[in-house]
Image (cartoon, rainbow, N blue to C red; front, side):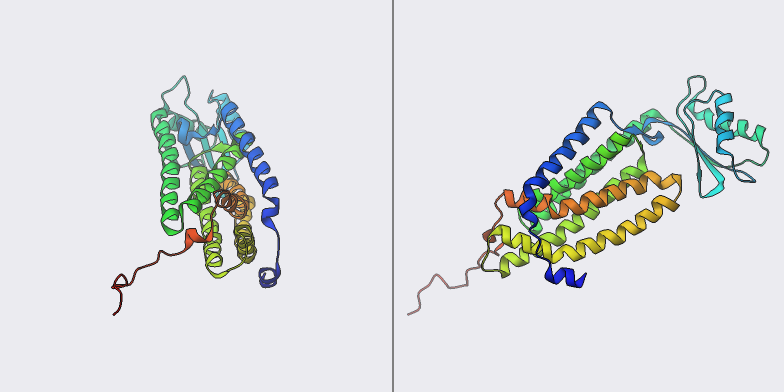
Length: 312
């Protein structure tokens, strides 16, 4: 990576038109899917019952699903979490029974079929609470983007601020589009992953912008495009190392973390890929398109006291 950092001379901005088209296609596909198909919201947002139980032996998920079906509990999602003996069951609201009674009925049903069943947790989320969580989640992302825009504007310059927010919005929309296209369940853990993606992508973008600012002040020759290209090459090793090490952890969670955090790990994996790409292309391209130049980053000149008086 050290050799890569010193010797790479990739002309990233030469491909900026291709990158813009690629990003535009991804965003169009994501928004189209979100409008036409929407998200497959989990019980956290739609309301329903969550039950966690433990068996005395390895749980037979197919048998549990059949027992729930025979008991007229429709739409149940049954999966292991932790060990093969631990089972998590999520059930949407049922027409024949009040929502706050479903958990007790499900546990009684499963205990009648297997006396080794032990209740570990049961909880109910009403549809009103689920709707509030959905609204608060959207509000949290909007507030995060606004705060980031203000922070970057104060630390760098408004052109960089718009570039960073464009990159973050790009990452969030495409990650949401992935979940809409695949119809993977979107719950609170995925929302948390989206907020983590915003933080990860911003960190990468800030590193790139720091180097661009340094090079604008150090390099006397070269266009804005040359300076940004040079900065991207200088931070490439750090960007790749951070992304690769993060992905190794996320892949371990994806394959060995169990079904409970499967969607969480998926959102982060998609977000890291898109965030790495956007920190190299989207943020820098937007700043360049807005006409960022050396003068924008020069510190204001401070007049010395008494400078306005002529010496005798």
